[in-house]
Image (tube, rainbow, N blue to C red):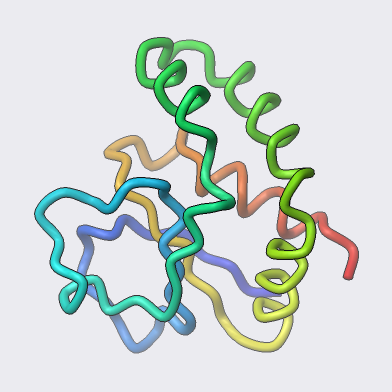
Length: 117
C-alpha cells in the first residue's frame, strides 16, 4: 500500500499518483483547476465539531487523534475503497493544514494502512 501526504498548496507532481483532498472545507486561494484533484472525499474528514474543537485546542493532538479515529469507523465503505485504490496505485492524501505532523491526513493515513481489505 502506497499512501503519501502532501499539502494542497504544494505543486502537483506526476509522482503523486491518485490525488485526494481529505478536508471538509475547500482550501482558500486554490482553484479547482490548480488543485489537480482526482477526488475530494469530504465525508471522511473530521466533523465540523471536531475540526473546530481541534482548531481551538492544538495542544490536544492525542485527543483529536482518538476522536477522529472513532469518527472514521462510520465511513468504512468509503475508506475500504480508498485503501483498495492505494493497494494498486500510489495515493496522495492532500490537506491544507500548515502543521505537517498534526492534521487529519496523518491520522487518516495511519487508519488506511491498518485497514484490512
